[in-house]
Length: 302
Image (cartoon, rainbow, N blue to C red; front, side, top):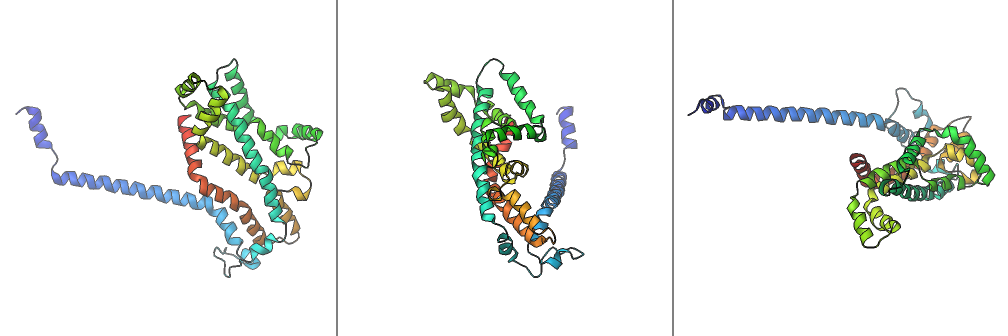
């Protein structure tokens, strides 16, 4: 028996020592899991706190709102705050107005950004990388810088007090969406496009029949981003829309608030706010798997 074998035999851990090591390993793993889940739960509660406070306030009567210490569970629960709040302003019209420009703008952003991203990712042409760099650099320009020039241009076009000023610009692409989609398109093997070209397909056919069907998660992310951005947009409609019958929900809430300027009724305002954000929450709830998958795939493979 060699010297090495003798040492291994002498110093080899016994069965009890191996079991003890496994128990210590399982205990450390359990402690890490408890710390991780406790931290995540605490942070989730912190981020959800404003929403929970809004929901709680929407079910209170006025005296409970100002009670110290704060009341989190209303007693009694005033469900009628919701119908009473929604009859103070035509929120059904505000919802319809928001859909009128949120849906077309989502379609415009997806169509134009996907087409531009395909050109940057899959086609070779002179100046492609320079133009892409300039496109990305436009993300550093804040909207407040171009706000006045855009207003003058849209006024000359006669687009004020219409949804044209909010919808048509989305059909000219968005730098952030172009970047996201380009990164995703780069992950699709070039051999697929080459095989389609050998079969006689043109670039538009490859884009529509091969690239877009393979990019559904990324396209869903862009559509959701744009829809949620349009739904929550306040500054754009405030600049371009002056007629109340065209107001979206963001301006409708401000109109609702100004209605009670002398005596602000917080339960009514919180009830109206809860209803206005409900569609976005539902969309995210039902589409979160596609949304997270698209973000993950785009971020990891880009």
